[in-house]
Length: 101
Image (cartoon, rainbow, N blue to C red; front, top):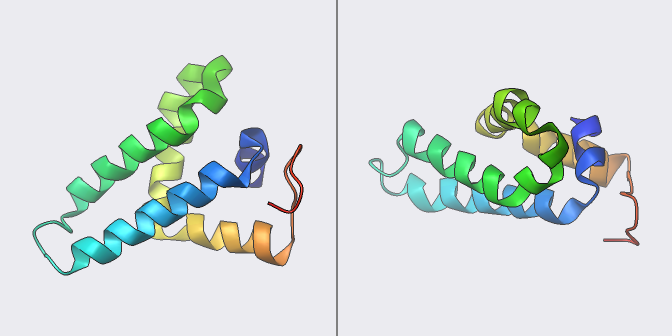
């Protein structure tokens, strides 16, 4: 996960994904029909495509076949959020070209 975060190079899209996923899960939890796992996974897939695909243009096949499915699974199982806490908050890993983002 650390390698992917560093390849993205900015906390902004990562935190955007974190915020969108958490808010939708919370919003949709009031309506059992909307919290359907398949709908949530499709939402996450779209969010990942919109926020991160540009960072992996050189490796588009790797993005579609490996990286995107891996990140989607990490978001669904919660490990994505744990990784953000570990790398940004605890280890204070800075991304290139950023100052105290």
